[in-house]
Image 1: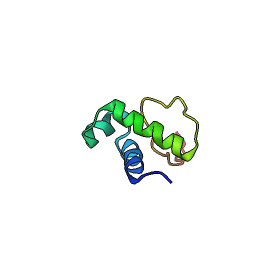
Image 2: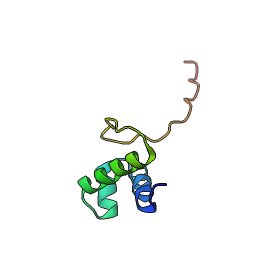
Image 3: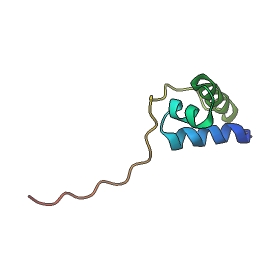
Length: 68
């Protein structure tokens, strides 16, 4: 089971949209956030992947376009 600190860091990465922004909000360094993310990935058994520099939020379905 992941520690609450690791889950809180993951949630802040999601909310902030990037590792650097999450680090600023958490008042830690970006390498510290990266390390916590790596520990979380190791804890849940997911392989480390090359994550994008920015975290994309979930997208809504596109709206139908109006005829011109």
